[in-house]
View 1 (cartoon, rainbow, N blue to C red):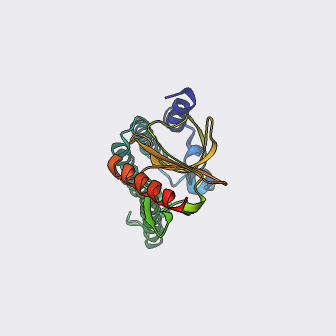
View 2: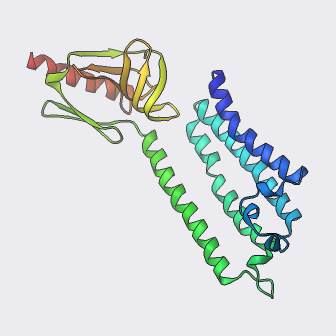
View 3: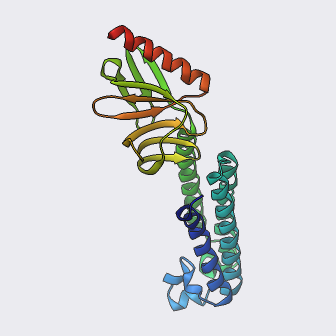
Length: 253
């Protein structure tokens, strides 16, 4: 890992740890979302000391989850990294639920949570579940190898950033074992070793990638308007696809 990547991994956990420290040990309670916007009267109904301990402990846990998860993802253990990151959801839900007992503004005279507060909590939790499901679906799709269909002298790449390439438009076709250095992603997805979308490479410049960089070989396709590197589920399947495209291209010559 290079220094920019290391700094990126450390940034969010470090910020969360800083907030947790300031809340817990420096009494900066206005860093707690919701509490900072309350009127002085409502703040007096909040048992702020135990609430601050709960929030700071949750921030420490979230920081640890983010750090471990991102380290695993960056070192290639993508599945393990996402499993670790999934623990963010129960931690956040527990924080939301447990925090209610310290907010007297949400409790009735018997100490039970008011119906309106229960509805608000339920809506927040449902929103978290929906967002997590949506993001999780995108991540799972982004981790899948490119879906490539070759028929009628057309190479169709399905999924995110999909496109259709007529064999007649291919000017260069190669099977390579190594990729040029990837400088940066310009408009695409990079989930572990799976790269999809627009990237900038040293040498070729702007390219489209549909590949798992840890699973060579790679098919290089060049048309008059674009350069594409791709591979599919297995090295054997990639080689077979290359031979199919090469045979079709020769027949068109």
